[in-house]
Image 1 (tube, one colour):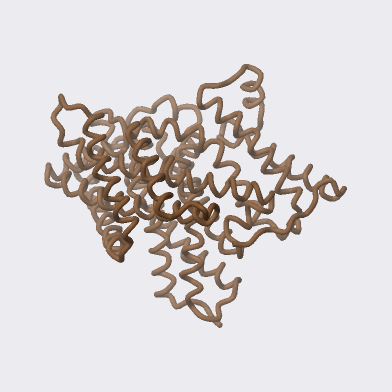
Image 2: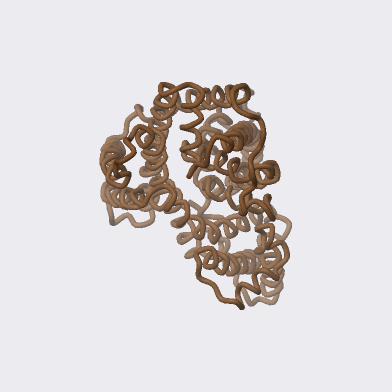
Length: 443
C-alpha cells in the first residue's frame, strides 16, 4: 500500500480541473468583473468560495462516502436520496448545464458573425438543431473520439484564455469600471450567489465518483489514502480554477471601459476581436464550441445512465432522446433567459447541497445521527424555498420580513443559522427516539 506517485496525482488533478473547467463556466467571471467594477475583489472572493472551494470540498466528501451521492442523501431518507440525486443530474444536465453549453457555443461562434438585422431567435434554432442532432448521434455511438478531443481541447482552451489575459494586461486600460447596483451594498454576497451558476458544487457530487475511480485503479490503496489523494488532486484543480476565474474576471472588469455587454460570452468574444482581430475571435469561438459539444455529450450520457439505473424499464436510448429534446427546447430560450431561470432553482438547491456536504464532512463528530441530517436539511430547504420564490418574484411581506431578519441573510447565508438550529433540534429528537435510524444505501 502507498500513496500515488507525484505524476499520477498531478494527472488526476488536471483531470479534475478539466471536469470543472467547462466552457460554460467562462461566461460568469467576466460578467462579474464588468458589473462589480471597483468592488471586484470582494465579489470575486465570494465567487471563488462557491465556484472553487465548495466543489473541491464536495469531491473530498464523495471520496469519504463508499456509496457516493446516494449514500449521503440516504442519511436523510432513501426517497430524499433519489429525489436529490435526480435534481443534481437534471440541473447539470437537461435543465441548465446542457442548454447552457449550446448557448455559449452559439454566443461565441455564430452570433458575433451575424448581420445586425438577422433574427437571433431563428439563427439559434437552426444552430441548436444541428448541435443537438450531433450530440444525440455521438451519445448513441460512443467512441474514444470525444474523450480524445476533450483531453486535447482543455489545454488548448486554457492556453487561448491565458494568451487573451496576458494580452489584456498590455492592451487594455487597467482601471476598473463603475459598480452595478447588484454589487454595491454586499459584493461578497452577490459574488457568492453568482458562484452558484457554475453548477460545480452540484456537479462535484457526480464528478467525485470519477476521481475516486481513477485513484482506486492503483492496487491496495486504502479509503484513507483515497481521501488524501483526492484532496491533493483537488488542490491542484482548485489553484488552476481560481487562476482562470480571477484573471478572466479582471479581463471583464477592464472591458467595461469599452462598452456594456449582455453576458460573459460576448465580453470574451469582443476582447478577442479587440486584441487579435476577427481571426482571433473566430479561433476562440471554434475552440469553445468544440469544448461545449464534448461537455454536452458527456452530460447527456451521464444523465441518461443515471435515470436508466433508477428506472431501468426505460432504455438508455429513450432517455438519451428525451434528455436531448428537453435540452434543445430549453436552449432556445436563450442564454440570458436560462441564467435568469436557473438562479431561483439554484438558490433552493445549493444551500441543501452545502448542508449535506458539510454534515458528511463532520459526520464522525455527531456519530452520523440521522436527526441532525433531517433537521438541518429541512431547515435549509425551507428557508431556501422561500428565498427562491422571492428571487423568482413570488413573495409576501411577512416572508420577506422573516428572511431579512435572519442573521447573515445580507451575505447570502440566511439559511446557515436555521440549519444549525434544525440540526440541534434533530439531534435532540433523535436522542429521544422520535427520529428513527435508517441504514444508508450504497450504490
